[in-house]
Image (cartoon, rainbow, N blue to C red; front, side, top):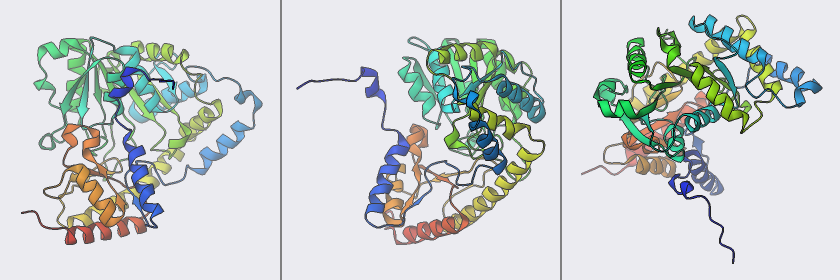
Amino acid sequence: MAKIKPAARMAELPPYLFLELDRLAEARRKLGRDVINLGVGDPDLPTPDYIVEAMMRAVKRPSNHRYPNYLGSEAFRRSMAQWYHRRFGVEVDPQREVVGLIGSKEGIAHLIWAMAGPGDLVLVPDPAYPVYATQAALAGAEVVTLALDPARGFLPDLGSIDEQTWRRAKMLWLNYPNNPTGAIAPKEFLAEAVDRCRYYDVLLCHDNAYAEMTYDGYRAPSVLQIPGAKEVAVEFYSFSKPFNMTGWRIAAAVGARVAVEVLGLLKSHLDSGAFTAVQEAAVAALQQEGKSEQVFARMNAIYGARRDLVVDGLKATGLDISRPLATFYLWFPAPEGMTSAAASKFFLESADTVLTPGRAYGPHGEGWLRIALTESEERLQSAVERIAAAIQTRPRVG
């Protein structure tokens, strides 16, 4: 019997969180249960018609079915540069400071591989999107986690990082508006991060996937708005959440030339770029004057109403849940006496509702749960009622 073994590094990878959640939810469905899945941050709203129509036109052009430009088409990179100027007031060179991505997850992983390796150190927030830490570990780099303390508004304490750690660090990862906590970062914090990274020659990587998903008058900034940021900062801007295009796999990395160029070089050896027709649809998403702003306003009105429905409903059950100014996530402590995994299992089995266990985002996510507001108000109301009933019937601690 042949014994074929994967690379040893694969043993470092835990099962991907959402695959496991899908497996558990599917097992419940096979039992005939109506499961409400609030675990995955995948928009349920449709991609806007004008983007779909642009894609249909682009797909019909035979030239678009050839290999794409490795770094993103000139039109796509130019449109991203124009968008950053219009949206954030930031000037970037579309040739040297923008690279197209097959979704930001791909770009995040590849940038880590391009920048860090054995002996290097990567600073990663905790809790956080798991890809930052898993890819750093696969690249052979040492991961140093930065606790996101609720007492600090889920901002890492950059001043607590010792001198030796800063001098060994190659990359600092930030993500605001934040997944999973929904927290936002003031410009003063971003300025501190830029200053420290400039001083210690650390690449500041900002995952800005939720920039357009904001409420109550708040608008998220770009880290590139901070003076001097382009020397040391690269930002990931994704079309997935703002334009409901998660399955389209299109994004961009924008900012520091050294990061953009080395990422583009690595990608040229690994993939052939995003499908050109998808890039043309992304150009349409950005360029049709006023359309994008209408899309964001309509989307945020829907998610804002969902946020209020769930927050108000869960507060009434006694859960300690806050009302975030951004993202479509709610982050709240698990019921007293329960770990995040136990609470997630409890609500799946007692309420047929999938909630993400916070521990999946890192050790400092232990004791927390995340809700994704990716169901209709009717389904969310049902989920709230189920959760409330489960809490009422749960045996009391002590």
